[in-house]
Amino acid sequence: MKRIQKLTAITLAIVISVISMTGCSYTGEKEETCTIVDITGAEVEIPAKVDEVVNLFPFGCQMMIGLDLEKYLVGISQDTFETQWLETICPEAKNIQTFSDEVSAETLLALNPDIVFCSDPEQAADFRSKGITAITFMYLTIDELKFTVDLMGEILGGSAQEKCNSYIDYLDRKIEDVSNLQNVVPQKETLHYINGANDRGFYKTGGAGSTTEACTQLCYIDLVTSPLIAFPETKADAEAVLAANPQNVIIGGRYQHVLYEEIYQAEEWSRIAAIQNGNVFKIPIGISAWNRYSLETALLIPWTASVVYPEYYEFDAVQETIEFYKMFSGYELTTEQAEYMIAGLTPDGEKEITSR
Image (cartoon, rainbow, N blue to C red; front, top):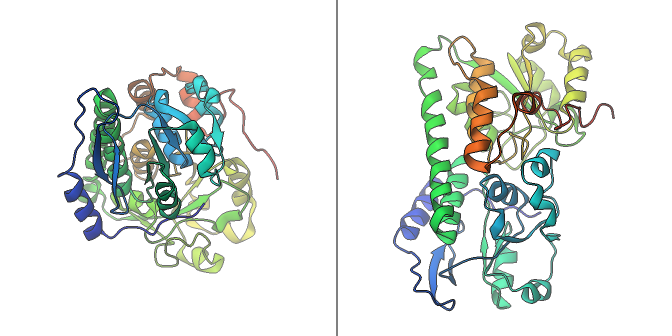
């Protein structure tokens, strides 16, 4: 999947100011249209009333399903089903037609959705040239996530817009909650993040410009790979990471349990502060892995603060997780389910991957 480069703060501010001057008004006729501005700054004429959406951005599909907006989806990315939790929380999702990111314009024209959300701006432009209403629906930072959710709410309108606004408010509150850590923590701690989405070892990670860096900065934590690599790089030098001697390690993704066991057995990690102090943590997995451009970014931020600074930041992960999915997904987890999720386990309480 192609990715757009991160917008600068100035560009994003301009886009936000433009979109605030546009808007959709619906008079009851399907042919009514309005103009929106997407994340790339492209002005796109769309139906004033959108009922049917094809979303080709996997994390965007997870976002819509997590916000209980699956009724709008007539097509989703075939990569949407990243975790077993998605189908548990929204069993209806398995009935939505799936497409590869190489889906043809002819296929979409036959389906005739009101709008197509694409992660690739070139694909969106190509679809528009062929008569398909398409926008770039993509985010790689927290600001872009908020912009995209806000735009989605404007496009769908009504109760969907209220749900999107509620989510942005929730995310902003969590960011505000952790902001006081800089005033109470006597010394900022360091952290290394391992992306265990696939089997790439201890040094697949994020660096400067990544969502992980944004989350750690909000929590008053230094990400040790920020000086080493910058987005879109995902591989850090092992020697440099070890030299940084991180005080904490968080591991996300399907391979987290394998990597967790291996890092405690690895000779080169045995003298690292995080290992010696037992500060290695497995990131929860929900509709999305919490560390993957997800709805659960709003939970990842306070969770990270609570595992790194438990004496300064209190977060009832089980209760908060139950309330979060009930509020946004309309699904009430049991206490046991919430505990499984926080432990990075499947809905059956199993490790998804136990060995290489």
